[in-house]
Length: 476
Image (tube, rainbow, N blue to C red; front, side, top):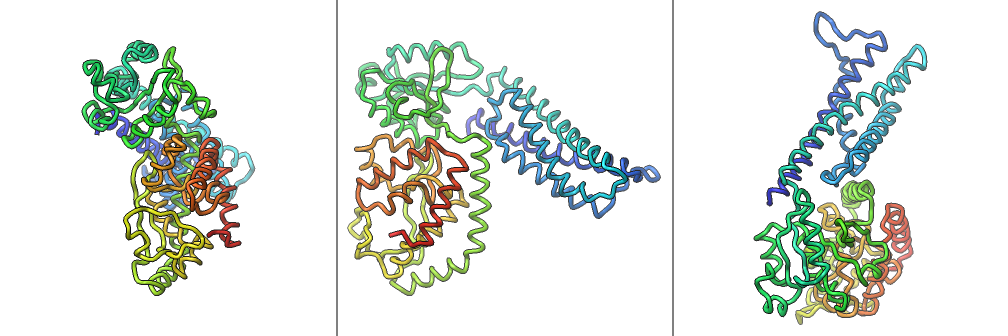
């Protein structure tokens, strides 16, 4: 792990620990003040006395709730780039939510002489929670600025393009004025011809980006190709960069028009399209992952009898394993094993060449027809969601064999790599199982639409329609 990545990881851990300490101190301080307000005794012979029934359980639950709220606020996502006013607002909003929920769960049951004591308790908790939390975050902010001045957070950057391209020259000059933010390493040739023509001007060729990243600890790649180059070249370069887990930006041209909602960032005088940036807000993205974790674990526990019965049925129907593991391409172009109930014979692809299935496919078993009709064969993917390879809602992951074919007709498929694939999305709902290349491309268009308009509201809508598909047996 590069020093910059370690520093960011340590800074994020420091924020989590600081918030946890702030939550514990807030509850203890509030409890002392609470009993003081109610004419209770805080000190007895020099010792602090805490009632057992209202101290130990909340002392564990209150910090836990604080950490959940802080996580769902998205505060820990962008530790480095958070503006001071935004940090102040997010801290206050989290403290307000924590205070309101705890007020209605704990404080409102207290016996009081008048309602002013309610307001006193609420405002006291709000001020204490906000004060402790923001104090520690302010200390960490000063520490972070100190590391910035030491160039500890400067991003190692490369530019992919022709070295004499005006946009490349412009970007290099811009980064020279932002040494605290960017650590420019050099230029990567977009093809072998340019590299062989002027090897001294480049770090290497794009096809060997993995070696370049390893050598220079690259975090960000900026693509700047010539204006007269076919836009397909953009997608080819993106597809080559995605598996290396780097932030990808691009000088806007025709590509920007094809992804109309893409966020535009500005590097001094050079506007950049942030290809790998997710359209959801930090809070929504964290809430989406939290929902995936909780509901996948809940689903595995509740549906465990169904999983066991289906597994037995598959085993009894035809020889072979009950589960079927298949390699798919997921977020950032990384490979993972998707888990499904086996719905075909074990010799379904004995030729070694991947084949698309159809509703009348003779390779599908008797049990497999029912599993596919009600989408029950997808249930084991709850384990993929729990692990983090997938989400409940997202583009369906494909095999590398089919992706290469899709990209010949739709080179923008690589844009799907920015988010986790899902069990369901608009594509499977509108198109169903894809048994032709045309259907796969049609499903891709629905996935692009979903990705450009990602929100928790849309996720809930998609889940609702998916339940309808399952109940009515509209699967194939």
